[in-house]
Image (cartoon, rainbow, N blue to C red; front, side):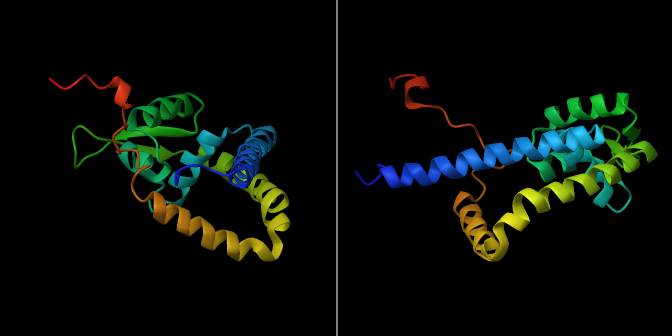
Length: 167
């Protein structure tokens, strides 16, 4: 069958998948140990830090990091309790609110960034060496193949078994 994976295909996939999971975990553990910031918090802090006014709407954060708005909202609530962000009303949209980076949030982001950058360099950039450009090209090809199939707004596919029989 054309859809079947060979043993070599599985070996490549397994190596990549294991590396990606362990790299994500190693980066997250280092990030939290050095700065007290979780990977989820860091993604939001960096997005806010890169924005012009150091503030974004929840929907914009969700779009940037590929999460559903409700998940972002829950995470922001936890971060607000820690003093990393604050919410404020959006004057142009009565239903909307801004999520703003606080001074404590900015300090946490800067501290986390230093350690996170060092860990990325140690675990990834230095290991890749001259293969970095090949990985960048490969990553772009994979992203092109995926297209919008993995966007936060993409519908969740249902299995044929879950669909009701045709009448």
